[in-house]
Image (tube, rainbow, N blue to C red; front, top):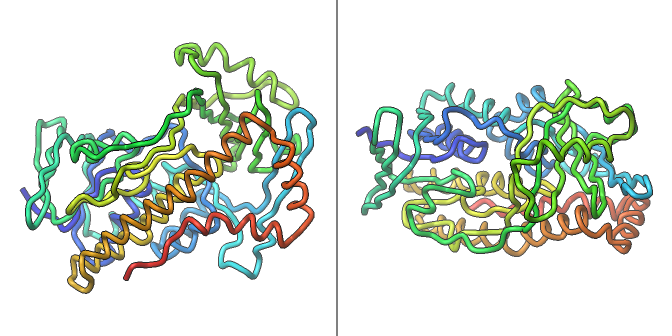
Length: 389
């Protein structure tokens, strides 16, 4: 059993980017992923301007921009009245290094990060490796995992659990995941349809108590993400039967769309009671899960990453005490609970349930006032925390 400096569990962007940062710091890393490959189902796909500096430091931003695209404009579209309220990140020109968002499926970002990780020569990646147990020692951690070749054990000085909201590591440690699950069902679809030809911004938040949706362009092949809400208690098995009536109602022109992928899911507002348990650090959805309205889930996970890999590398090298990892756990959990989760909850209620007139009027005023736009568009940066080392 070869021991590595760090085991990273989970090969999504949060896991692989942590591994990349550690490998670039000269540490040995092994990534374990339960699935047979990078997960391709519809997931996060918009990266706020505020996380782009961190992606650039890790060396992956240029590749991400080439694989996806950058954009500044986005709309709130009031479905009932056909009103469009437009905001634009160009108000941040000259104020931040990257005054735009990047659109790219999270699986593609994971691919890019894995390619960079491979080039470091300091990491191994094992797919089809499902963690079933975690044992901590004074100087390290042993992880038991089920693989196609049977049960294996992996040893490391530290573990980063980035294995999603259903985290096997978190469960093996007996950590709680308190909070709530929204009663409705949600459906994320990838469809081909020329929304832009009908005046849609490449990010459109469709506001309506019945037909609320996130409509965002994924790539340059006219592939779009449309995420909508269904009422509580509906059988997931009937989604494909119900789906055409939703698209018939919302599509602005012809109804000839191509369904490429879809994925039903539940939205949560939950968090572990701690993001550190001895030599195990939690990050991303394994630590905290939120509904994706506003893109605050992956944003929070990336901000976890940008402080964690530096802090852990310093602890391993002996240039920082391991108390900095306590500060990581405390600061990142507090930021999620006090900022990210409440913001995402309000976004979800407004977009899918209320079309609140006061909020709509506030958006109209913001769209007319550059300073108000700047303040609103800087909000994702509030989810960052200062470097610990």
